[in-house]
Length: 365
Image (cartoon, rainbow, N blue to C red; front, top):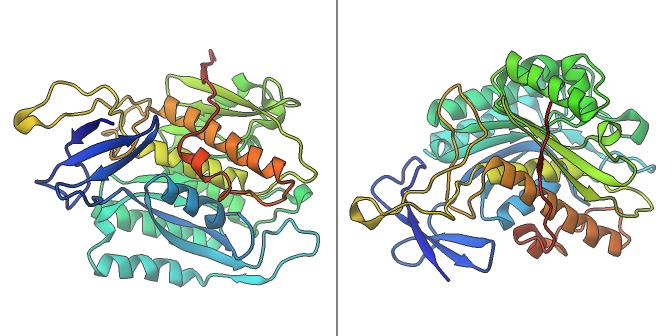
């Protein structure tokens, strides 16, 4: 096992150092001088919650925590189960004002500046969208380096996934203008750009239209579907920056009913990757014997690249590759169990160290 000391970049950790202890090929934990775990990156995750199954925060929180990230969940709805069951569901949206109140309470105890990123997903009402953006502004006031990653869930009525009226408009206008990272599927990308991309090249053009129109620096198209290179055989994702685009594919597995919550899972996994710097190739030690890592970033200007590093350490391309491997392991476990709900607990070791790897290929567009 090896250790690499990293200069901290999180607020409130000045004057200390971290030692990155590796356990196996991909597992790493931040340890302080006394051997206790030091403060990890923190994600404020604002999306739906289901009591049974895996969707929204119920699909995102456990994987992020299993990867070593502190997660502060705020639920936009609390449902008995996800909305694609033929039998229906029970539950209610969270009152809009509660979203802001929860963030205000975290701020009051002095913790909001520790927030490394905000992840938003399913909205229970259009008004909740405005509340989420208010929280984003509050977090960025406390920590200007914090990332806002938006998974603009717009629903798929044909599959039984429904969102309230006005949510699509909110994402197409406000979310597109405010997020640092956007994670739409190909249908959501089309709504946000008023286009119908049907090839990978068209998807890249639409994603770059989003990059040019707002503050986003990366677009992860988390499911290419019909716009992919091999939609009948592969689950495909496309990561687009201002200058580069990366395509990745994993085999489709057999399901009686395709599980729900896959987009929530992949967005969370990818965000965790962006909260990590590349510490696999440390440079010469600086004063005090502390190594500085060299983060690889597709994230282009404007502004500094807000990558925090305490864990495995990946570039955005490598974060995409880890996302694909971890996703596939969850799907494999779910398929083998013949379950409708994502088998996150059964696949938990594969979330950290996927046994099968997939390579992201640069796409000319």
